[in-house]
Image (tube, rainbow, N blue to C red):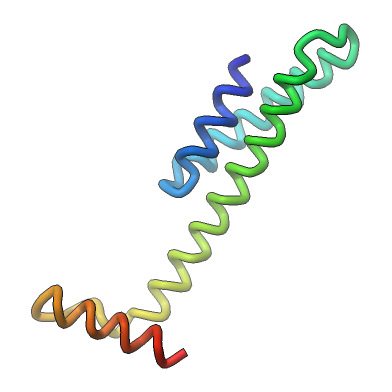
Length: 98
């Protein structure tokens, strides 16, 4: 049960980078639960749900981190604007340049 809750919570918070560590913990607990469920059969659905949602949380966190690195690299010339409007214009220009 805890693994499933961690997996779902990790998936929901993965864009905030909190989901990655929660996903890892949920994945470990989910795999342990899956091995235990293999013997008895009880709780197998929750264990599978935990493994799947935890894996998705890890993948979304990695993709969000890669996007943030790409965005920061693409807009690094815009970090010292005089106003938010100038920053916004600079970001639009940098992203259009390709």
